[in-house]
Amino acid sequence: MKKIICDDPISAAEAAADIFETQIKEKPKTVLGLSTGSTPIGLYNELVSRSKAGKIDFSNVKTFNLDEYYPIKTGHKQSYSSFMNEHLFSKTKFSNTRLLSGEASNPHDECAKFDAEIIAAGGIDLQLLGLGRNGHIGFNEPAVSYPIGSNLVDLTEDTLDANSRFFSSDETQPTQALTMGIGSIFNARQILLLITGEGKADITKKLFDGVLHTDVPACFLLLHPNVTVILDKAAAGKL
Ligand code: F6R
Image 1 (cartoon, rainbow, N blue to C red):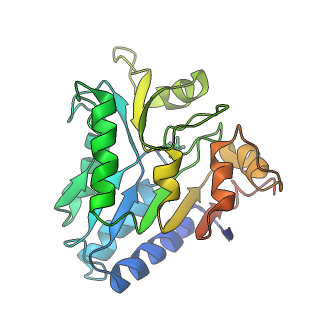
Image 2 (cartoon, rainbow, N blue to C red):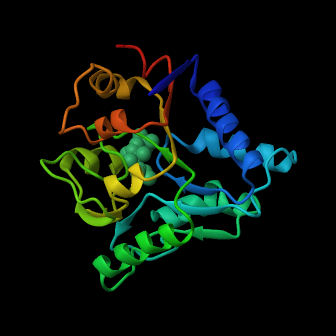
């Protein structure tokens, strides 16, 4: 696992954007795995600027997103489909994007279809991840065992609490989500884990303490041959 510590979230976003730029220049038909949440917003802003400056061309890129609340209407203000449109897809030339559908009548069929589509696309070349403060990746919450493929999960109290900041008091926060499985994530040829902020310092310390904690889903990444972790100084503060 390669570790890059940057001064602040802006330089972390730039370092992450460099990896995206290199990947897409080398392979214009790149398949990307994307994430949502606070962490990637700076990166997405940087990717939009580089696209507008003609440095990155997303027109041949295909994307799969890590997760989506369930149930939730596509286009609902709090859906991850809306998040992606707001921060990335509507701002530049993406034409081939796929999120798990929070409207699927059969979530298990939807997950199987999603995994099959990733395989049909040739697999993910570069998977972006954020880190939950409980160690989750995607919405794979700490557990004793983990489904390999994409699946429907019950969100933990900690995750519901961490994400409640995005919901106003009159909005119902879904307690379940569809997520890529640990195996689907692990199949990516390259993984970029972006971690910023002091609130992630404790879990970051646990990730790097030399032990494979099975209750920290991100620890599975320690076994992957091509993972880069980009951190800001605040997240790296306890290393
Ligand atoms: C989001 C996702 C989550 C987040 C994680 C960190 O698609 O899969 O694993 O990456 O919860 O969220 P933030 O960046 O909001 O701290």
